[in-house]
Length: 171
Image (cartoon, rainbow, N blue to C red; front, side):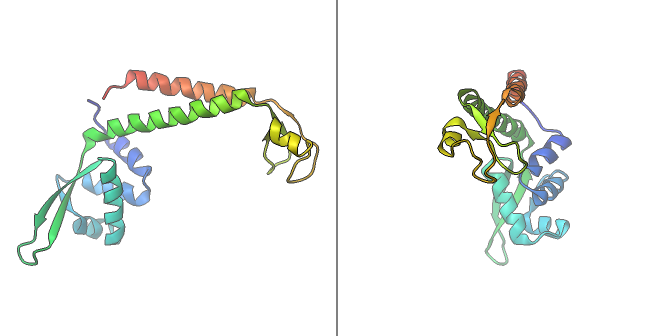
């Protein structure tokens, strides 16, 4: 089982935005807390706190317990961090990134690219460049072969790094 430390909690929360970092920081200091208390402590509007909590809840990073207020009859939600879920979340995110990188590597290795080398203009695969008669559709300059070996090397290195990290982690 992978458990999260404070830095991991903060880094994962950052994926959901600055408000999530503040919410997770507050949740990390208590066993359980209501959304109203979080809003008071964080000085974030209640609707933003709730929206953030539900995003985290959708990924099982926080849990909740529901009770009924005896005076009003309204439901009260008591939120808590689930730090044991953060490791699994990180592994799933890495797998998702790995899939994207492998797809991108396939695209890079199966295409030949052309570019005018002008800042702000994009490189085009052969088929598109041919359609424009090797003239840049943005600046109308002549497009030349673009060697993407460096891009392929960077993607390959990142794929290997993530594969190594995933093989060293367990859920």
